[in-house]
Amino acid sequence: MVATIIIASITFIAITCSILFFPHITFKRIRIDTYWIIALLGALVLLLANLAPINVVAEEINSNHSINPLKILVLFFSMTAMSIFLDETGLFKYLANKSTKFAKNNQFLLLILLYLLTSILTIFTSNDIVILTLTPFICFFCKNTKVNPIPYLVAEFAAANTWSMILIIGNPTNIYLATSAGITFIDYIKVMALPTVMAGLIELGLILLIFMKPLKEAINVIEEEYHIESKVDLIIGATHLLVCLVFLIISSYINFEMWLIALICASSLFLFIIVWRLISRRHWDYLYDSVKRLPYELIPFVISMFVIVTALNYQGVSSEIAKLLNNSNTIFSYGLSSFLASNVINNIPMSILFSNFPSSLEGTNYLRAIYATIIGSNIGAFLTPLGALAGIMFSNLTYKYGIKYGFRRFTKYGVIISIPTLLTSLLFLMIVL
Image 1 (cartoon, one colour):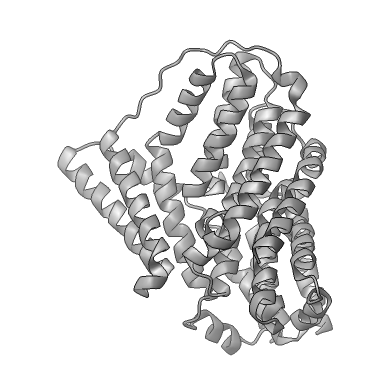
Image 2: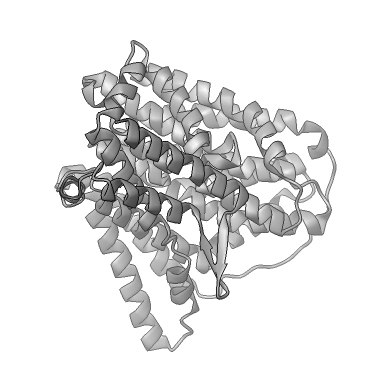
């Protein structure tokens, strides 16, 4: 047990250090993220030392239960592929452009519209995709209009990592934790709707209050038209995503697994696009770029973290940690600990690790622990940039565009906004459950 704890701890610390100090390595002009390489090395050490027996790991990976990491990866990648394709059509940028024109020179209205846009897009697509798309737009827009970009960046990142809680598909951590607990699409919404809405309202109020002074300044919005290049691509992409969402909602009633629904819809989307390209002889950029932008590094990362967690379970470490968390108030013990742990080992490893802790709990207490961990994994993402991979990508983008929004500034606003938002969502989760 001690050896497993030491290897896992070193791996988690090394992943954190890599994100902070050496996030990438370059090999023959190819940039490679380091976090998944470190996770892979940690998993290999555990396998070679037989601390995570290969037959046990293989049995878990090949199992037919909902926590199977391969099913979870298929669900996540299928939903991400459809979201990225919609982004490639220009939908997100088009909506952002329309929002800025509608707000005219009122910064309060502009920030509220941006917050709402981010929230809506996050609900129906993915928080990571929204952050990657809207962050460059915000940086570019603020630089051109000479306004302070910080209120808009804070609002965007907070909204994306709060409203991602409302649906299972909003965040990879939701997918992992909810499916591991056998929670259906509909049951998830029933529980998470109220905590998410109330957390979002508190959060928006705090942001408007914090940035009241800079938002009072008038701006001159540059009138710039932005058009969707191919409406056919947009219609095909949006239709597939909507159909997928409908079938995910009724999946438990038709006895069809969510990962299979998402895979069929994503495959159908790309098949339609290929046929449309062959008929219309249009360029293949959308398709090529969509495939290119998929976060392939998450495959070895998630599987490696799954191996590490399997080792912790096999050696009895998880059960010892669970004893500390499985007290009379599971909502706050799991909510607060997952919130903090996300910023120590990142929210994906945290979710894989925490998914096993409530196994000794039953009924409502078990569900409280799972949902509280989901809340912690989402809101923990904007306490510090280490809370989620989205935070690392976000920080890289702001640095690239010359915005002074480093670790200290990120954490300053993160503490002020995330803690009241977390407590609000946990309180309303307690009311719902």
